[in-house]
Amino acid sequence: MRTVTRIVLLAAALAAAAQAQELTGNAAKGKEWFFNYNCYSCHGFSGQNGPGNRLVPMKMSQAEFMAYVRKPARMPIYSAKVISDQQLADIWAHIRSLPDAPAAADIPLLQDIIKSSK
Image (cartoon, rainbow, N blue to C red; front, top):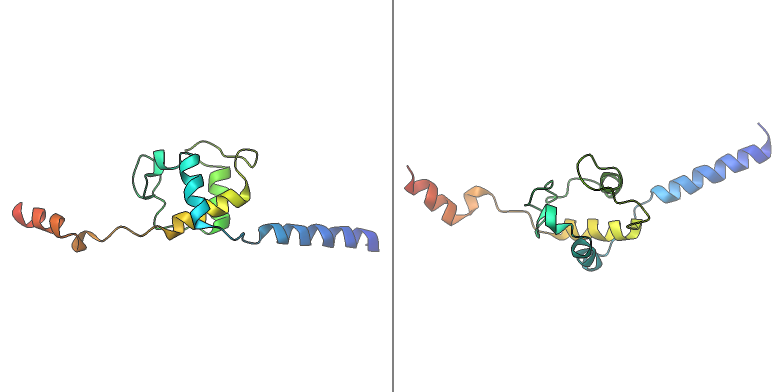
């Protein structure tokens, strides 16, 4: 293989690796984007309710989340022309900052209802 070809291939591989690195997300900015892009209308204010998929607890890596938003199965497509990778990194950081829902056993009112229905 010629040296020039090797250099071009190496440069392309390095560029792809750099692009694949995680971006640093800002949760405060992500909260703004979450509301500005109306994510809450399907995923709820807490990321745990609504007609869309449950996002909290966030089990996807940042790369998986970005791929999910870019090529979703059942939601509008948000291309890079619509929302940047940095904005998605911010939204991902915001979602990861949201608290998990308590377990049913840890909700006293729910436990009272269960006990009274027996």
